[in-house]
Amino acid sequence: MTLARTVALALALFVWVSGPSWGAERRVALVLGNSDYRHAPRLPNPVNDAKAMAESLRGAGFELIGGAAQLDLDKAGTEQAIRSFGTKLAGADVGLFYYAGHGLQTRGTNFLLPVSANLTRESDVRYELIDVAMVLDEMALAESRLNIVILDACRNNPFGGRGLRAVSPGLAQMQAPAGTIIAYATQPGAVAADGSGANSPYTEALSKALLKPGETVFDIFNDVGLAVKRNTGGVQQPWVSASPIEGRFYFLGPTTVVTQAPAAAAPVPAAADKEAMFWDSIKGSSNRGLFEAYLKQFPQGTFTAIAEARVAELGAPLASATASAETTSPERAPTTVAALAPQAPPAKRVDVAAIPYLTPKSRAALASYPDLPSPKALAISAKGNYAYFSNKSNSRTEDDIRRSALQYCQYRADEPCTLYAVGDAVVMEAKTFLPMPVEIVGAGKFDPARVPFVSDHTRRVGMVNYQRNNGHKAVAVTLTGRWASVWDRDSAEEAGAAAVEKCGQTAGKEDCMLYAVDDEVVLDEEPAEDEEN
Image 1: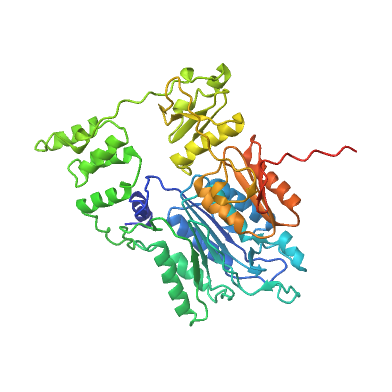
Image 2: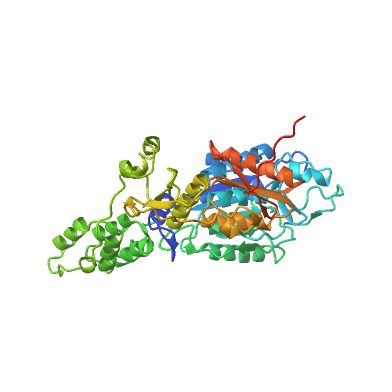
């Protein structure tokens, strides 16, 4: 079996287990390697390290920013690559950032050194280097299910003789936001070797280990740590910082067998194993098509009755699946779990022309609602305002969608709205407008759990990360949940202006509203009027 066929098999069998599953997992990686420094000692291996990692990640099914490792970038090029990474990461399931090159910490903050970096005084740090938090910020905005940051950047400080007293050895340990793993080539505050061979000791071990089938991501980092510690005589010990991760992630699935070409093909799993693997990958899904596919492939399977019940629960007809089962198995009893389940009355489907309170112009704007993917929700007000949300990127739950529709509508109408439709079904009682007020905190102390318009995932990751940052900071949001934050600015005014500007770069035609400055919510404050000359 060739490596390409092995990888295809691994991806087809899904690599997430013990958590929600879906059929088309999307993985995005940005790989950076800097060797040819203009104002600092050249490093021989980072470019080789980045190429090795890019090849391994491509073999593990990752889409690479730029199609390959990004090498010897200056500051502007690095920032552009990170922005492209954030854009591509939107709607992806797994994001991975890898960096090899010079790195340093100052005042507890970690920085990556582009090849153009030239520090002559401490204030140059902000203008010459790349804060690792920029990468974490992009990942938080994308709301990927799992993010992995790998830093092979703990080498000696290249500007050690320039009197930069705030610069400390190695890298500082960072708190991993929710759903994030941060891996270092060595422990915080220590220095890693560049390596005497073609690769650093850390990347040499990691690029090979992540292609071992059946190893969880934590198993791989543990194996790499032990290998590097052994190969460096205990001088270098890799380190991992992680938040709780839902499910178990494999770079290559646990059932994959890799063989060396032209050896004989790997054994094909038995039918029972195939069925168990299939079922394990879909059992937590809310996609009825996956259960229908199971019934079609395994009409007499171990989990057939459960699959039929799930299809019925998710609202799909069982005619084709049941017919297939009866054709191939005449001895089966005709009564199934699905047949015994109580049948709910059919829901009234959305007819845009029948939505009350709206103007003809609003109805025309809502004409596309029935064709939008679910989960989705539509909220209306008695004043004729409306707001609808649809989950186009798999990043918002149904609860997020409902709350966002109500918050958007309530903010625009300046009064509580009500849910008119959830999915394609009308949920508002005829001739009855029952207000459904939602909380929109506009003043007071900043609380990540109460930030309006954004998803719960953003609250748990992006807003918690914002709260932890130091210095003058600010966060801006839009009514559709786009947001941006900045920190470590010279003044509150500068932070506020920068947050709104950053938000506007991705908001398109939407208005960005300043939500918080430092740790105070300012959404309800009136914008300051320009003074007359």
